Image (cartoon, rainbow, N blue to C red; front, side):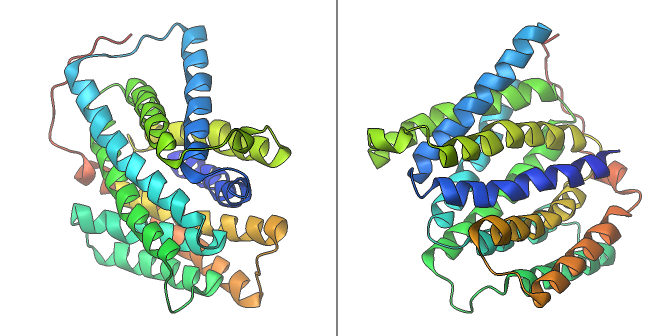
Length: 292
């Protein structure tokens, strides 16, 4: 069931916030992202090699991968740099505003969507109680939410007209290359790459587990509309806040637990939507496939 699979992946996505926040005490944001995507690319291509799985390499595939990767690159850079300047809880709350951006981009503004989104967002507000005055980190994270929403919209269309495995793999390649180029802008020191316990855990959570969660998301977006995927991911900041409370000492009081309950209620309401998949399907697009 794609809804259940996506809910399970939110625990991985939620764990990436405190894991990344802790790792950024040692390493600069773009250098961390390079290591994260490099590790994810190595793992995925090792699996593809064992499966003897060929990748589609035609112009249409590379064009779609480039467009999706551009939004993904922008989202991760803004989110990770922003996370260095704000709390893990605030970052999780602001990032999940893609729940609002996705239906706006797609112009799917039905009453059911707004009610379920509204319940989830009210719950998120109670959960993390973001400060009235946003800092630079919060503003950068808001930009990442808009970029991640655009990426979800791309995946809804592209995964239904082409080989999703190849699309997934090429995005990892392009993200790794882009992060390698961006990393040198920071001029990282050798000490940043010391394999400390915090850095290794952060890379395993984000580079291995989150890469697997990304693969599940791409599979699920062949079956579910983007706005429902975004809403299911609204549980992510609840998980992030719980883990940040436990591991990083960020506060989660009774009001926060109440907000978590509202988030889960909004997610459950949204996941019961019926008949959206067919209406979300794009017009047919011809893509030549060379993959096996």
